[in-house]
Image (tube, rainbow, N blue to C red):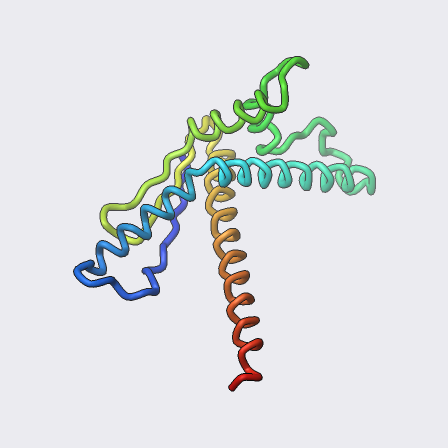
Length: 171
């Protein structure tokens, strides 16, 4: 199993009357865990693995076309490709919905996400026979989440800035 860890920022708002800081942190961690394990996030991880596989295939194909890798086998496949091949149903009669369900089931089966004791640390682990492939999936899982958080934060910041700019003429 390969693991990676995320450190969650504490809640920015103040605790309501009677609620302690630890309760706010626990709620924040629970929210992060729920989002990490959501179907939407799992689908974005599969899409990122597919993109990584396509990028590597393009790199291998480009290197072979330029002659810079004459010893590289043309059959060489990425870890992501082998992973995705292992989770896709084999057979031409599989519907896109069945393929999607099989991918998500296999990804979820190898996945472990949890909080480290009562800390702000969330550990993401992925079990696979190939440790490099396990690390690729665990790191991709965490990176996609961090990228989503950053994108959401930027969107919120832009909306807040727009509202401040709109209010300037009234000041």
